[in-house]
Image (cartoon, rainbow over all chains, first blue to last red; front, side, top):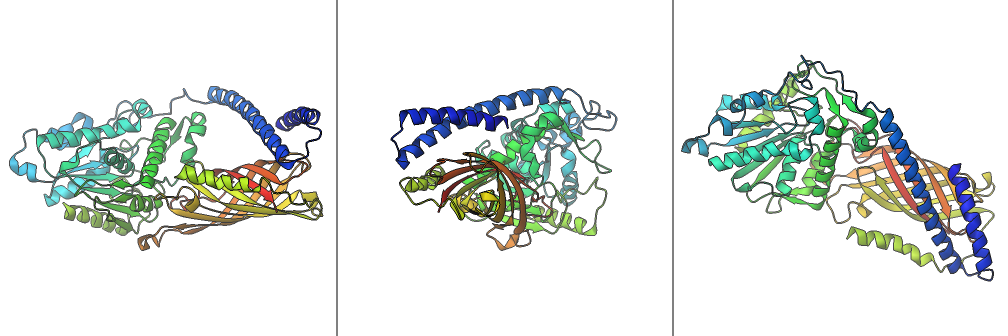
Length: 358
Length: 183
C-alpha cells in the first residue's frame, strides 16, 4: 500500500506537469516516450526505496540471527570440535605419496599415483576403501589429499574459501611432479570434481604428467535447489545440521556453516558457467564420469552438463557411466547405515574400471 | 553474442512504437508479448507470453494466459547449456485495473521438458509438472492508449527437482519480465 500511494502521488504530480506543458500534444509517440521516461524515473525511485527497506531489514535480521551462537558441538565425537582432526594432518606420510617417499626410485617413478580428492565437509576417509582396494591389487600409489579448511574444526571450515579447499590438490600434484612421478591420476568425488575441473580450466597445474581423471558423483547442479538462496537466508540460519549415519561421526562435519555452503554454491555456479562456455582437457588426458542415476546431493543432471561442456583435447566426448544407484559417492560405503549387494557391486565395478585405466 | 540477442529480443518492441490501432475498451483484451525468466542460480529462459481478459468477467481483473519459454533462446544460446523448455497456462488476478500500476497475482500450471542430447541419460527425468505462484506488478505505459504494459514478477515453483525425483532444470525461485502489447 505504501508503494501504491507513493506511486499515485508521483503520477499525479507528473501528470499535472505534463498537462501544463503539453496540452495540445496528442501524439502517441510523444506520450509514450513521456510515459516511459516517467516510468523509468519512478522505477529508479522505487528501487532506491526498496533497497533502503531491504538494507534496514537485513540489518534487523542480522541482529536477530544467531550468528554468534556456536553449534552444540560434542568435542569427543564431532569432527567440528577441537579434539578430533583428520589423521592425515598428524600422519601425512600415511596418506600422501609425496610425504611417504621423498626419494623415489626409478621403478617408483614409473608406477601410477592416484591423487584422491574427497567432497564437501568430508575427509580423506571418503577414499580409504579405494586405497585398500588398489593396495590389494598393488596397482598404484595413493595420495589421499585433505581439502583445505577441512578435517580441522568448525571455525576453520567456516572461514575457508573454495580456493583454499583447492590448494592442497595443487600442492600434492606439484610435489609429485617435482619428485619425478610420470603418471599421475586424479580420482575425485562430489565437490572434489568441480575443484579439479577449475584447476584444469584455469591451468593451475602443468598437466604434462597428468594421465587421467575420474569423477565420482560430481556436483555441478546441487540436488537441493534452495542452496542458491544461501546468501539471502544464510545469515539467519547460521549453520545447517546434518544427520550423520552411524559410522560417519568424526569423519564428516556435522554442522555446516552457511559461509561454507555459500562457498560451495559459488564454486558450482562458476563451474557450471565454465562448462557452458566449454572446457577442453589437456592433451592426452582422458576422463570418466561415474554418476548415480538418483542422488540426493548431486543432481544427476551434473553429468549431463559435464558431458556437454567437457571435451577431450581432440574434441571427442568424454566417457560417462550412469550407475543404477541412489547413493551419493558410490565408491564410499563405509560408515553408511544400509549397504545393499547392489551398492557393493557398483563400488567394485567402479574400482575395477579405475584400476583398469591406470 | 548473448547480449546482442537480448538487445534484439527486446528491440523488437521498438517495431510497435508507431502503431496506432484502435483500442477495444469493452469486450475482450488480448495481450501478446515477450517473456524473460531467470531462475535464481540457474538459467535464463526466453519466450512468449500472452493473456486475455474480458470486460464481463470481473471487469478485466481476471486474466487467462500462457507462457512458452526455453533456455534455447536464453542461457543455451551459443553455449553448452541443457535445452530446457517450459509451457504454462496461467490465471492472473489484477488489481486497480484502471490505474497504471497494477498489483498482480498469477498462478501457473504446466510442464517442463529437458533435452539431454544423449541416450545414456534416457533414464533421467525429462519431463515434470510445473506449479508456480507469481506475485508482481504490472505497469501500463499509457493510460489513455493502454497498449503497452510491463509485467515484473517474482515466482516460486512448488515443484522442483531434488536429484531423486523431478527435473533438475526446475529451480524454486525465479524472476520474470514480460512485455505485453495489446493486439
